[in-house]
Length: 244
Image 1 (cartoon, rainbow, N blue to C red):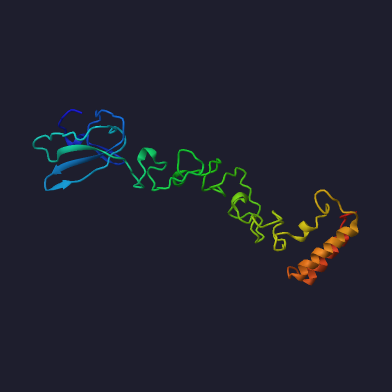
Image 2 (image 1 turned 135 degrees about the vertical axis):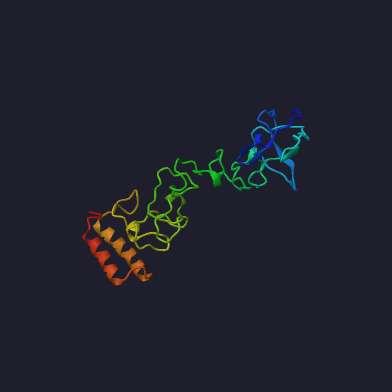
């Protein structure tokens, strides 16, 4: 860059401060941290950050700029020093920072795109903005939410809200409001009308009623249901068509 004189009116404002050089400044190759040092009547002004726009260079220790005589604000010199541009001061260079305007030294990036989590409007990359996503850190395009709370099923520790966490729940997606045992299973799940298990049907109606009585008595002994609820369950089982 050649020596030249210019008035402060040539300064241009950018989002990082004042650009103290003409727009014709040549472009270099590597990121620098420039600072504009200037003298004014009655004081000295320190470093000014400028944007990563045209001051990209290497091997340029200093470019003095002569001030016009008689000007109110005199440019003393422009120093280009090797370093890094770190706008958010998170110790991550601007060109390598996945959120250059937000402090995020860990650079967490859940979906692995160009934006870090704290500045990514869709952190999990499932096409649903964080503000509307019921699981903002886990992709779930269907937004399934069995219990209708604030959390989607894939990030809800207790998807059926039976107070038994999913990692310990042997009967997921229990009917909402149903009484469950310590394993998260309701009587209806333990004694399904369809059969003893997925591959075995009830031999007859009596077998179904007998199994229902056994499980209902267990719930009664554990204090999960009262006597009235026990009798209601048994009456419904007796009147059902299960096993017939």
